[in-house]
Image 1 (cartoon, rainbow, N blue to C red):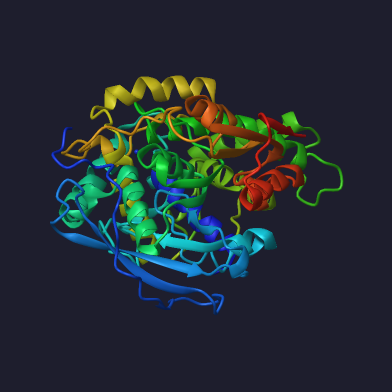
Image 2: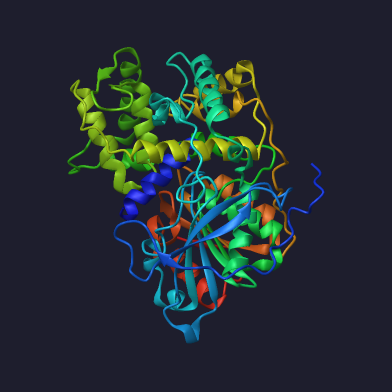
Length: 493
């Protein structure tokens, strides 16, 4: 699997998401651990230096002597032992992503000084294969991106979304077992501290991306004394009252931040995918085409669903805005639909992967925060969103499976605060469809003096070594290699 495929799998995972008092102190750090036994990793195209091991963790941290689950981790050791500082956790996006292949993949894009300083550590979070895995056995039709995200009916009704939510909730309740009730961001952070202890590291550094920024922030909140250098890249709003509900809602702002870049590209003279003479014409043409496909869908054999309707076009738009390199995917879809034809069926991960990603997504988003359980609670918000943000047609405020689950979160979401060491660097693109700048600024405010933020004048999701710019990359690389951060928040124009 190449890095672009991994990124796309992470966006599928984003689509899945896109969230008491206990006798045992849940933030207690893990003590001494058994040494890890490293062996060959499963998978193709991996660096021969990468090795894998498993770490046993409690399923329920309020019952530390009870049932356990396994977390699979991977490692490529420091390339210069004399310069080694410690270990760098590569925290994946999602919920429903993993970073097991990242030491062999994006980890090798890190500058030499960073690869010399750290062992690169990937992992599959609880619930994700090959760690102890969860599966809801959803109806295959419910694995389409247009079902995993709550796109309303063409008239804006959420009745169909509520029916999908009930189907998914029933399947997860029936097939997800006890594990699905213990999949949460806080538990992933606790698992990572067990990984840290198993690695024999008194403190650990991290590079968290997308949903991984929230995991990294929660880890830094629960275990501040165990953190070294923390990079949070493409940042989520940490509002503990909304969590993933807020991230879903952020798509309406993220699309408005990004669509003008696509429209400028798609109206440029000489572009073989040119859609209109002006950017305004690209936008109005997209809205007209989506409305026409709502009324008159085109058959699309082999796709899921097997039609190209307005909702599929909008989802294609959303997915394509993650990376400017994917703009041609949306343009080709638009050009084909104008001629009443369809493009080739897009590639999709295997159904087993989609099932696993969906189940972990349901577990995380529903266990992180409580969701309303009545259609009326969503319909008004969807109607307002449709009026204000027509490109996303109300989807960002719709109901997901959590609206129908029969149980509530076991504990409140972790509140991110300014208490802890000043060792966090945020890096954020200005135009990011999935984690907009507005949400990143809220995380920056929550962290206070603990953090410095690098804002990058760039478009796309994932900033560092991906869709950012050289100025932002230099700032992050310098911090990881030397610990030196900008003296104050930095703008990379």
